[in-house]
Image 1 (cartoon, rainbow, N blue to C red):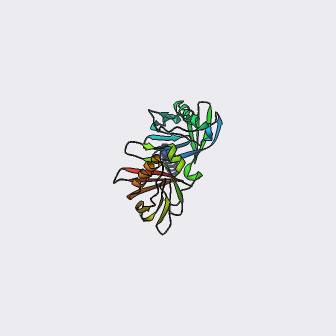
Image 2: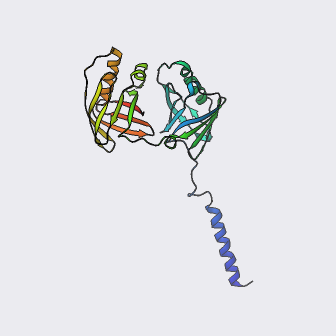
Image 3: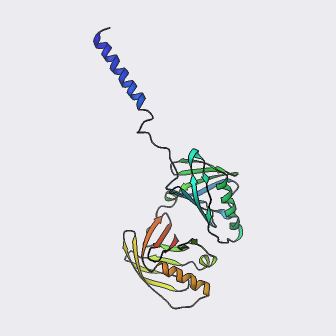
Length: 259
């Protein structure tokens, strides 16, 4: 064999070895994870969700927030090994009517069963406690709604100690609408709200006035808390059809859903 052929073979061997050694290296794509994303159920096989759901899961900062139509539970989560392990969960304490009263038990049973999970693209599948739940990334199912031109319904009050929902809130359904030119209209629970909103990126500064009607005490108390959250400067975050307003001045806020 000539010297030239020997060098060619050595060179090819070196290239092949380099190619083999590069597999499994730095350039590998990490496995997909639900962390940092929100999902909403589109189908359930096996035991259905009482009241119809849907199940909504939000994963962020090593924690999961879950609701199946009644209360919201939040706590630490471990996703290793494609198994969902939850820790101690804190939950809101709202009573729900009819079949929805069973939604919390269904949700807790699923999460406590250490369900397996798979994520393919925007589709998350959970299997556990007799159910297979198919969920779709909320941004794919419901793209972000625009801040202006959308009517937002208040679904929860954010207090320093907790996220608060109530039957009164569900009954009176306070609303908020901001037009593209910054005009505000809506209801605070009892009275009509008008005013302006100065929008600067994710900051909204409200200047509001209301009518002076009196309603039942629990409605007036709710209205006071809604208006407190809308007093002055707030920070807005939109996730799909959900708007969160936080007022750092008085440590209050609102969660709202697009109508």
